[in-house]
Length: 164
Image (cartoon, rainbow, N blue to C red):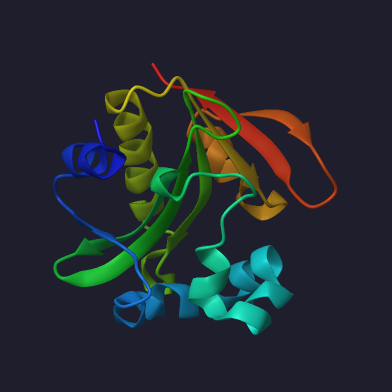
Protein backbone atom coordinates (compact mmCIF):
# COMPACT_ATOMS: atom_id res chain seq x y z
CA UNK A 1 0.00 0.00 0.00
CA UNK A 2 1.24 3.49 -0.87
CA UNK A 3 2.33 5.30 2.29
CA UNK A 4 0.16 8.37 1.54
CA UNK A 5 -2.86 6.04 1.27
CA UNK A 6 -1.88 4.30 4.51
CA UNK A 7 -1.63 7.68 6.26
CA UNK A 8 -5.07 8.67 4.97
CA UNK A 9 -6.48 5.39 6.27
CA UNK A 10 -4.75 5.70 9.65
CA UNK A 11 -5.67 9.39 10.06
CA UNK A 12 -9.09 9.68 8.38
CA UNK A 13 -9.99 12.81 10.35
CA UNK A 14 -7.23 14.78 8.59
CA UNK A 15 -6.35 15.69 5.04
CA UNK A 16 -2.91 14.40 4.03
CA UNK A 17 -1.47 16.69 1.35
CA UNK A 18 1.87 15.89 -0.30
CA UNK A 19 4.16 18.93 -0.01
CA UNK A 20 5.62 20.21 -3.24
CA UNK A 21 7.49 23.30 -4.20
CA UNK A 22 4.34 24.67 -5.85
CA UNK A 23 2.09 24.33 -2.77
CA UNK A 24 4.69 24.88 -0.03
CA UNK A 25 3.76 28.51 0.68
CA UNK A 26 0.24 27.38 1.65
CA UNK A 27 1.78 25.36 4.49
CA UNK A 28 4.67 27.63 5.40
CA UNK A 29 3.10 28.63 8.76
CA UNK A 30 3.89 25.16 10.15
CA UNK A 31 7.58 25.75 9.52
CA UNK A 32 7.57 29.43 10.46
CA UNK A 33 6.22 28.50 13.90
CA UNK A 34 9.05 25.96 14.32
CA UNK A 35 12.01 28.20 13.48
CA UNK A 36 14.18 26.82 16.33
CA UNK A 37 13.71 23.24 15.13
CA UNK A 38 14.57 24.21 11.57
CA UNK A 39 17.65 26.18 12.61
CA UNK A 40 18.89 23.32 14.78
CA UNK A 41 18.09 20.57 12.29
CA UNK A 42 18.90 22.21 8.98
CA UNK A 43 21.10 25.19 9.87
CA UNK A 44 22.93 26.75 6.95
CA UNK A 45 21.22 24.46 4.44
CA UNK A 46 18.13 26.68 4.84
CA UNK A 47 20.14 29.79 4.01
CA UNK A 48 21.50 28.09 0.92
CA UNK A 49 18.39 26.32 -0.39
CA UNK A 50 15.46 27.88 1.45
CA UNK A 51 13.15 25.92 3.75
CA UNK A 52 11.57 23.77 1.05
CA UNK A 53 14.96 23.03 -0.51
CA UNK A 54 16.33 21.97 2.87
CA UNK A 55 13.44 19.71 3.87
CA UNK A 56 13.11 18.15 0.43
CA UNK A 57 16.80 17.19 0.39
CA UNK A 58 17.45 13.49 -0.26
CA UNK A 59 19.99 11.16 1.26
CA UNK A 60 22.65 10.03 -1.25
CA UNK A 61 21.48 7.13 -3.45
CA UNK A 62 17.92 7.41 -2.11
CA UNK A 63 14.98 6.83 -4.47
CA UNK A 64 12.84 10.02 -4.58
CA UNK A 65 9.74 7.82 -4.89
CA UNK A 66 10.41 6.62 -1.33
CA UNK A 67 10.20 10.13 0.19
CA UNK A 68 6.84 11.12 1.67
CA UNK A 69 6.78 14.80 2.60
CA UNK A 70 3.28 15.90 3.60
CA UNK A 71 1.19 18.49 5.38
CA UNK A 72 -1.53 17.32 7.72
CA UNK A 73 -4.56 19.58 7.60
CA UNK A 74 -7.34 19.94 10.15
CA UNK A 75 -10.54 21.79 9.23
CA UNK A 76 -8.88 23.10 6.08
CA UNK A 77 -5.86 24.54 7.92
CA UNK A 78 -2.27 23.32 7.92
CA UNK A 79 -1.65 21.76 11.33
CA UNK A 80 1.51 19.64 11.03
CA UNK A 81 4.07 18.37 8.56
CA UNK A 82 5.89 15.05 8.31
CA UNK A 83 8.80 13.69 6.35
CA UNK A 84 8.98 9.92 5.99
CA UNK A 85 11.65 7.97 4.12
CA UNK A 86 10.65 4.45 3.12
CA UNK A 87 13.21 1.64 3.26
CA UNK A 88 15.81 3.68 5.11
CA UNK A 89 18.21 2.73 6.58
CA UNK A 90 17.26 -0.60 4.98
CA UNK A 91 14.40 -2.43 3.30
CA UNK A 92 11.26 -2.77 5.43
CA UNK A 93 12.05 0.13 7.73
CA UNK A 94 10.59 3.61 7.77
CA UNK A 95 12.64 6.64 8.81
CA UNK A 96 10.72 9.54 10.33
CA UNK A 97 12.84 12.53 9.40
CA UNK A 98 10.54 14.97 11.17
CA UNK A 99 7.11 15.61 12.62
CA UNK A 100 6.48 19.31 13.23
CA UNK A 101 3.26 20.65 14.71
CA UNK A 102 2.12 24.22 14.16
CA UNK A 103 3.12 26.29 17.19
CA UNK A 104 -0.36 27.08 18.51
CA UNK A 105 -1.29 23.36 18.51
CA UNK A 106 1.75 22.18 20.44
CA UNK A 107 1.27 20.74 23.91
CA UNK A 108 -2.35 19.68 23.27
CA UNK A 109 -1.80 16.03 22.32
CA UNK A 110 -2.03 16.66 18.58
CA UNK A 111 1.52 15.44 17.94
CA UNK A 112 0.76 12.18 19.78
CA UNK A 113 -2.30 11.58 17.59
CA UNK A 114 -0.22 12.15 14.46
CA UNK A 115 2.60 9.92 15.77
CA UNK A 116 0.10 7.12 16.49
CA UNK A 117 -1.24 7.57 12.95
CA UNK A 118 2.26 7.27 11.51
CA UNK A 119 2.82 4.06 13.48
CA UNK A 120 -0.51 2.64 12.25
CA UNK A 121 0.25 3.71 8.66
CA UNK A 122 3.66 2.05 8.83
CA UNK A 123 1.98 -1.21 9.82
CA UNK A 124 -0.61 -0.88 7.05
CA UNK A 125 2.14 -0.25 4.50
CA UNK A 126 4.09 -3.32 5.63
CA UNK A 127 7.01 -1.75 7.48
CA UNK A 128 8.51 -3.65 10.42
CA UNK A 129 10.19 -0.77 12.22
CA UNK A 130 10.29 3.02 12.45
CA UNK A 131 13.57 4.81 13.10
CA UNK A 132 14.08 8.48 13.92
CA UNK A 133 16.61 10.95 15.22
CA UNK A 134 15.58 13.21 18.08
CA UNK A 135 17.04 16.19 19.82
CA UNK A 136 17.19 15.81 23.60
CA UNK A 137 14.20 18.08 24.23
CA UNK A 138 11.86 15.87 22.16
CA UNK A 139 13.23 12.46 23.15
CA UNK A 140 10.84 12.04 26.10
CA UNK A 141 7.86 12.52 23.77
CA UNK A 142 9.11 9.70 21.54
CA UNK A 143 9.80 7.44 24.51
CA UNK A 144 6.17 7.92 25.62
CA UNK A 145 5.18 6.84 22.10
CA UNK A 146 6.97 3.52 22.62
CA UNK A 147 10.32 4.34 21.01
CA UNK A 148 13.56 3.08 22.55
CA UNK A 149 17.07 4.43 22.18
CA UNK A 150 19.52 2.77 19.85
CA UNK A 151 22.92 4.26 18.98
CA UNK A 152 23.37 8.00 19.24
CA UNK A 153 25.81 10.71 18.32
CA UNK A 154 26.72 14.15 19.60
CA UNK A 155 23.91 15.93 17.75
CA UNK A 156 20.84 13.79 18.39
CA UNK A 157 19.56 10.50 19.75
CA UNK A 158 18.65 7.57 17.53
CA UNK A 159 15.33 6.00 18.52
CA UNK A 160 13.33 3.13 17.07
CA UNK A 161 10.10 1.28 17.50
CA UNK A 162 8.93 -2.04 16.12
CA UNK A 163 5.67 -1.88 14.22
CA UNK A 164 3.25 -4.53 15.43
